[in-house]
Structure formats: C-alpha cells, structure tokens
Length: 313
RNA sequence: GGCGUGGUGGCAGAAUGGUCAUGCAGCGGCCUGCAAAGCCGUCUAUGCCGGUUCGAUUCCGACCCACGCCU
Image (cartoon, rainbow, N blue to C red):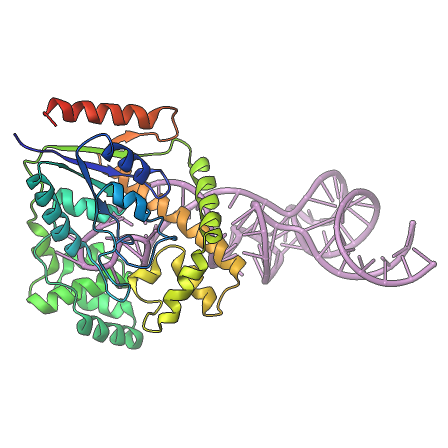
C-alpha cells in the first residue's frame, strides 16, 4: 500500500494549525510545517508558532530548525520536507504538510530546477553595482545573458534580477534554460490537498487585527527586543523581514512610534494574507474549505479520518 | 453674534480657468534557493447652492461644516 501525503494551505490566521493539530489527535499523523518563518528559533509569538505543549502532543517538523542569523530557502525546504515525508512514511504514518508559504508548496508540487544555491559574495557584488548603476542597468545586462528572463522580470525587481544574474554567472547558462525541466518530487504520490479560504475577507481582517494586538499583549515587543539585543542581527535578514518583526524592529531602531509600527504591522499582515490567497486561487488542485462555516472543521476532520481508515490507517 | 483660516478620494497631501499629482491603505495579479520577501497593475475626490466664463475644483457671493480668536 502506498501511504498518502496530506496538504493543508491557507492564509495567515485562517486556523490551519488548530485544524492540523486536531486531525493529528484523531489519526496517525505527523505535521510538517510549510512556513518560512516558523523555521526560525526565537520567533515565537509573532509567528503564532504552535506552543511547546502542542508540539509535545503532536510531532511538528521544520519548526525551530534555523538561527535567525541564517537564511533558510525554498531549496532547503524542499530537501528537508522530502526527507521528513520519507521518514514519516517509514514509520507507517501520514505526513500532513501545513502552512502558508505558497512558494514552498509549489516547490513540493511542481519541483524546483537544479540550480546553484545563493551566493552571498555574488549578491554583495551585485548589490554594490546596483547602488552605483541602478537595477535597470543590471536588468539590461540580464537581457543580454538571458533575454527570456529579462522579458518576464521587471527592471525594478531587484530580487529576481539578482537571482537570475547570479545563476547565469555561476553556471554560464541562462536561468530560463535551467528552469525548463522540473519534475514534481511528489509525482506518483497519493495526494490530498486542501486550502482554508475564509468566505469573508472582512472577517479575516478583523481577526488578524485582533490577533496582532493579542500578540503585543503577550510580549511580542519583548520578543523582538531580545532579538534586537543580540547585536548580531539586522533588518536585512529574512527572519527580521517577517511580518510584524520588521515593523517592531524598526520601532526599536527609533524609526517608528509603537502606534505606527502596529498600524503597519497589521497592514502587512493583511497584505500577506492577500498574497497567499492569490496564490491559492491560482493553484487549482487545492480543495477549498471555508473555515468560518459552522462545523467546517469537524466535518473536514471526520472526512479525512474516514478516508485514512479506508486505507487501513 | 463678529472676525479670521480652512473644507480635494478611506486617510495624508499637492496643483490648476480646459487632461485633478503623489504617498499610504484597499482591490486584482505575478512568482523556480531571501517568499511573512520582492514586483506589476488598479477604483473611489474638489462641502452645498448660485453667479461670472465658451469652460470653474480654481474667480465672485450666499449657505453649511471645522478650527482659532474676539464679544
């Protein structure tokens, strides 16, 4: 028999974690987090990380695996996640991939091309050139090395221009060629995929705002303060660009009042949710569930448990 | 009650006798090793009534509202 892989996506604040933990208590499931912020140690309150108690009850993988000074990546995620999926299957259990980092889900579903890792030095060089010449100039260079990539990347999209050039330099080949063949690493796996999609955006927004205040009440600012106090972290690190952390960091740097940081943090959270929803809409293989509908969680839970039973689990 | 100042989009804030900046928020989208990131696109406005004018958000008058000062 082939063990399945379950996927649960959804925007921030939709209730994914609670659903996942609830399911794991009713079925032989282990949770694999699909979340670019939960990987960082010390980012707890602001990421709504599952509590130690919850993690003791249900195994969570890919949480707290990285120091905030490091940069995690989609590539590392893919390798890590596939490793956990295999290991969980090896235990005769079912992996439930839960999270909101849609690029990571896509990597899992569609695969990533064989590309070189990010190179810190190369990126530093490119940043230096960009401050002197401007990104449009580097975009023009990309147009020579990889016209196809230049066509779909905006002259202002620093991040992607940088990545494309980095790959061209490192491999001597256009990124577009390298990206041509990718295979789904989960091809042939029995997949069940859901997305929590709140029916009313308004309600999600209210919830996100309340949640932000509640995080502050539970010591979010102190959490950021202790990261700030380490002295070896800076605002450019992926961990500190996370929603909420970035704004509170900026307040600690004296750039924003706490009120302003809060306002912006809440707005950034809404924007994150919006981008996640855009991605969910485009991923047609996901089955939508409205978490605000009465009884939605219970009936989902029941259905999943039943379908696992059919497989003898 | 009198005088003064000011009313521009959800908010902030420019400008103009003829096409009403811009920023933020919102909304839609893109996404291959930073993705809670980055980028692209986009709707809504000149308080009200009248006058001058070919044409008024702009000039004039009345009114309403806000703020300040005076009584």
